[in-house]
Amino acid sequence: TQLLEQSPQFLSIQEGENLTVYCNSSSVFSSLQWYRQEPGEGPVLLVTVVTGGEVKKLKRLTFQFGDARKDSSLHITAAQPGDTGLYLCAGEGWDNYGQNFVFGPGTRLSVLP
Amino acid sequence: EAQVTQNPRYLITVTGKKLTVTCSQNMNHEYMSWYRQDPGLGLRQIYYSMNVEVTDKGDVPEGYKVSRKEKRNFPLILESPSPNQTSLYFCASSPSTISSYEQYFGPGTRLTVT
Image 1 (cartoon, one colour):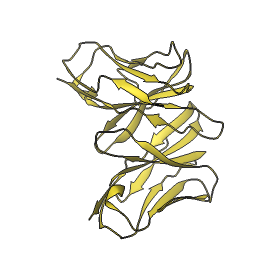
Image 2 (cartoon, chains in turn red, brown):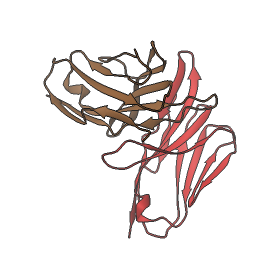
Image 3 (cartoon, each protein chain N blue to C red):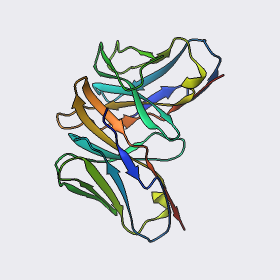
């Protein structure tokens, strides 16, 4: 079974600070996605990365897919309280049993005003 | 509005009483999936469906059933719920492009089994 680890598990920072969260696996994924989940709601897709080494930017968020397609990072510049939430990475791949979709446990971010 | 809907949003039931959680999407997506989310364990896939009449087990299918008779609906059935199925459940759908399965999630169903 493919597994995804995320670090840190919890992160509390002041408004305006920069931060990076990581998503790591020993498995190769055909694509990797980042979601943000707020309390009482379902996860919302932020970005999908497909190519090894790919970098995507979404306003103050920068996403990178590792060259070997086993890991990814999310960097937030000048964090704001609205960035508070649970950040989930999800890897998509195929194994002997078919399509496989696995989520990491998440990084819970709190941005204090 | 393009969305995934789930019903009910909250459910408290007793052990052994059959229940169904409905899921419907209005985006004409082929791929649909059910997850449960538990503290410390993250989201785990229960079942998924690549298209009508095609369903497959995910990582934690025991105790659950699904059906996909229509493209828009993907109900989750618990024939005999047990307390260890107390969880937050999410339905998701995806347009399933060749390169990736970008999923759109419903608002969740919080189930408590006593």
